[in-house]
Length: 143
Image (cartoon, rainbow, N blue to C red; front, side, top):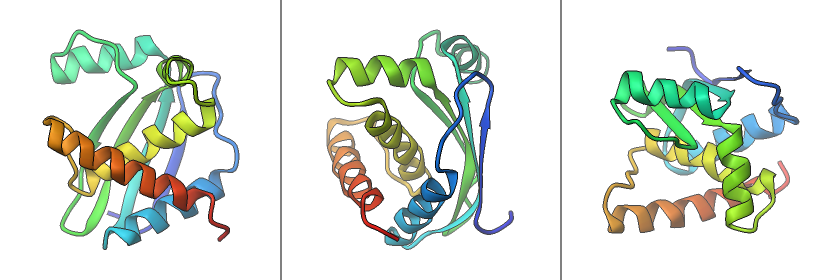
C-alpha cells in the first residue's frame, strides 16, 4: 500500500472542489488518531450506484450515504469509500445543515471506520459522533 495516497473519483456529475484542502485535512485527522494514510479512494456516486453495491457486496437492500471497504494494515489506514451524493444532499436538508458540512461528516465517518471506530451500538455511535465533530473542527483550522 502506498503512503499518503488519497484519490477522489466520481461516478456521477459531482466533482469535489479543493481536493488538496480535503487531503490535508484527512491526513491531519488520521495523524490525530496516531494513524498514517496508505491509499484511500473516495468514489462519489448516486443512490442507484451505491444501492447496487450494498445489495451485491453486503446483502443489504437499503439506500445509504456511505459504504467503506477497509484495507487497513496496522496503523496504515486505507480502503475504498463510496459516497452517495444524493443521500448526502437529502441528509443535509433533513438535518438543516449545508451540503459541504454534511459531506465532510460523511468523509470523516469513513476515515474513522478505518481508524477502528464503529457505530453499531448506541455507545459506539455516540463516540463516533463525538469523533466526527472533533475532526470536522480540524477542517476549519488553517494549514
